Length: 377
Image (cartoon, rainbow, N blue to C red; front, side, top):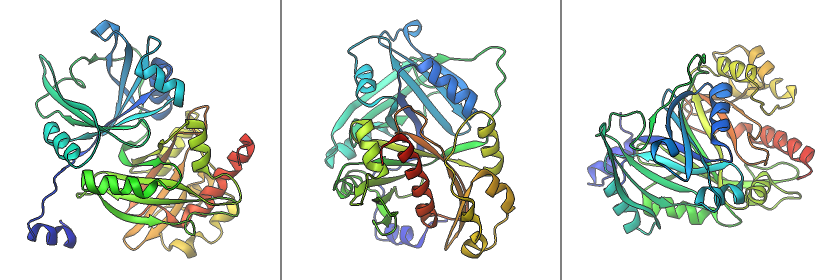
């Protein structure tokens, strides 16, 4: 059902000039795509899906596509020196290159966004094979990150032209219950958050739906600021973080130092049963941040009634927060790279539309403990 705001906009004759259907895929540039793909298959429960490389006519890179429900990751590495992929990995380590968004019309998406000031990354291009066609276009984002617009309504193949189906014979695949991308968080430099908020507002028609200042997100030692950007239908959300003044180095500053610039800090993956998902992920070796067990002493008084038993949440370290529309459960992984950069959030929403403000202090204190162990606090 459309919201009151949306109804008012429609009645005033306003239209969404960039209708987005959701996240199509996320592409990571990595040092070894074959091994990275295997990690997401074995640790996170993705299924091998498609492949592109020298065997398919691509001479400078190899890309492995893995999928779980509505989640699609593309792991790409260079097989030559001096390529854009190799240079990206040399500068940043493994990280997110492209946040690809599904659209009905990739040409129109590119025209609308570049016409409003976005810098072009890829002019509209049509890829064809016997399974149909995919139209791609793209714009540049913060740092070396890009948005790719994907139009695939006329394609029936495995992923897109240039790829072939990929399976691993005899390998037993078991999903972990991950469903779709809930949101992706970007870290930008000092005093750059409002610049990128304006970028999303002006070039993509997003709205700032939540803001957190250094009073909301702070500990004894560090702080950050964050604004959550959402497209009109709410299918795509991009919180943007920047550092704030504190006694010591914040997690955002650590990220910017080790990633050597701005980029995607974490990806939130939705599940319908966070207890089962976390148990499965932990059994496969995925490591998560832990908050002190005292966090659970007054949890019920803070969040009210929840459907889940408290003991499994306490055992696994799952955090809970409530807003006016319901509650959510969330847990954050440790960085999945050797550099303290990219990590994942596992989230289950039970009506809540927020992002766990009540957990910020406990969460960031847990992050600071990890920073201190690395000598970076």
